[in-house]
Image (cartoon, rainbow, N blue to C red; front, side):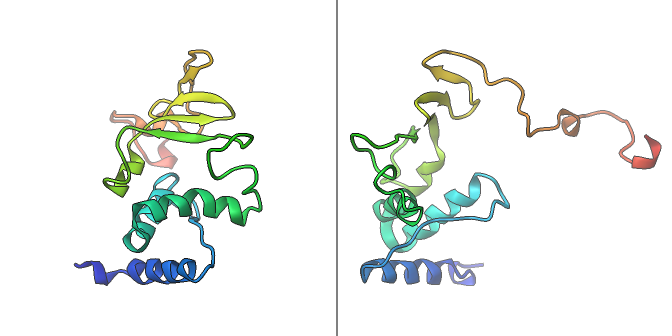
Length: 148
């Protein structure tokens, strides 16, 4: 299997061509794989736009299409500052966008791996409400619905 077995290089180059001519683009996913889809879109864009171009697309492009580029999308005085702090530089390797240390949302700093609040107070996140603990069971109970 090779890279030309996939359509992403064509899509990324088409997007790069649009941007080069003064157009706009943004990343977006349908949520099939929460989290990874946005990363994959950034990585795909970097194949044609380079790492900095992909990062601009992911931040400024989305803000533009939301009509909110006066309020978000870049770090500037007076703008909202939800952001991600990375452990490694995405300009060295775009896949470093997945190497997250912290997430800041609404002025609150969270550990990216646990979602525990780090600032202004240290508080554990608590139960992951989207996760069903029973699905991680490791026992010999039947998985047949009719045996329950």
